[in-house]
Amino acid sequence: VSPDLSRGNQTSITEFILLGFRTFPELEILLFLVFLVIYITTMAGNILIMMLVVTDQHLHTPMYIFLGNLSCLETCYISTILPSMLAGFLNEDRKISVTGCFLQLYFFGSLVATECLLLSVMSYDRYIAICHPMHYAARMGARACLRLASSSWVGGFLANSITTLSLLTFCGSNSIDHFFCDLIPLVKLSCNDPQLMEMLAFTLSPIFLLVPFLLTVMSYLSIITTILKIPSTTGRQKAFSTCSSHLIVVSIYYGTLLIVYMFPTAHTLIHVKKVLTIIYTVLTPLVNPLIYSLRNKEVKEALRKAFWKFMIGHC
Image (tube, rainbow, N blue to C red; front, side, top):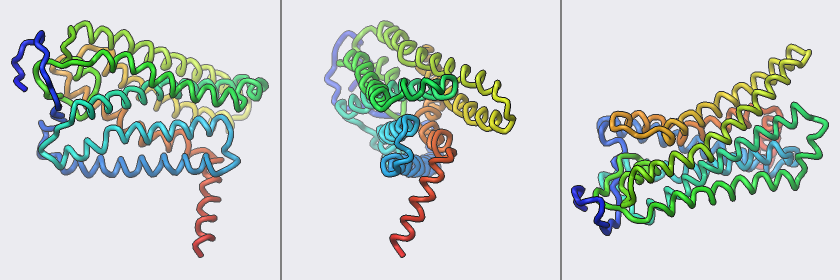
């Protein structure tokens, strides 16, 4: 498809070319190995947590049900991007069909929105547990837990339908200067007014990114304030360490998301935004199992029991 066609003339684009990291061809094999290890580790960690939450009766509580949902989400999330990204490192022909591109855009965007909502739900759960423990059983029963988790998934997928459906036709170039089909690069190829489309993206971003982020931060700040009032120094340090690590990971995740989606993309910032995108698409799913789950005493105990059960069964 000729890149110099006027934007007003709709063209029958049947596939896109993902440019990815072509500006660093000498690093492609190294990047492939690094991302392959990250993908395998992320999948193994999150699948392990899901199995523990499902099989261990002691983990059938709201907090671990939410963590199981987060692990399931991270597994789907990273699988929408990394397999095609890894294939791109080994294949010179980095083409993706329009249908495949739309599916990747829709599922990735939906899972991002779902994660934002789920992280805010998880912070609310911890807020009730720590700041209002007497009301926890009443507010976070099985029905409320299921409702909050399912609302995060449904809300995330419905929210992304608005932006995905607005990108139905494309004009001009079929080259996407990214390593996957993301919203902002596709907006630039849309037949619709690019300024209008970017404005739509920047309008929806605060609703599904900034609002959940502020709610999450407010919850954790209230939690930290309550923790500081704990008389036991050991208990205070342990609780503060856990919550502060959660807050740091959440801040990095949301911070990179907000920079990528809420600030206009100048040509000089394209490569910077690619690096920031790697943080929330690849590194966050890698560290979330460690930060949220594998450090917990109950998860460690469930893992120990599962290990010994496995060993005894194979002796």
